[in-house]
Length: 191
Picture (cartoon, rainbow, N blue to C red):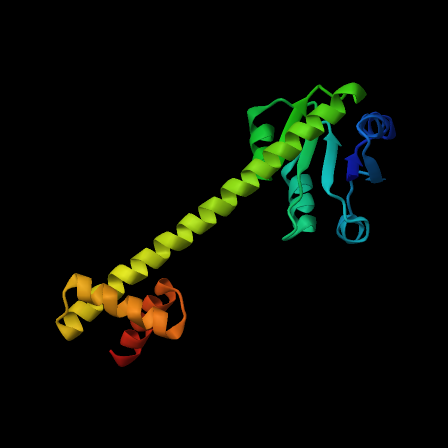
């Protein structure tokens, strides 16, 4: 696994690098905390994980990492000295899969990285499930509104309106929610 290490000091970067090597991971590159070349570096190196070592990660630092990742969100592991609630909250909100305080010890790095990767995968699965659930809810709302429109406009019962939408979806080989949305859009154009 390719890991990009962002560290405040060479000594701490060496500890992270040693831990990664113990776990059989490849350190892609180490950058200083100014992070000015971070976006081109991410494009060039294409790491699978980002490890940040900072005494106290600040909002600007975390924003730069998240912005550089763009749509390709990666697991973020943070080793820090700052245990303040505010800093931890900032890190978690920025997407940190692990935030380890005073725990930068080479033998611990592989296990911490493994936990972070699993946590990242679990959260990604939950986000995906949430997206599907939100889409289904939105479609259900469109269907209910479209049924109401058909009931009012054509004097249909709720069951007849649903079957009309369903038949239209089957005839057009489209999803029921998409057909319902089209019906609503057409009604908006007419009114």
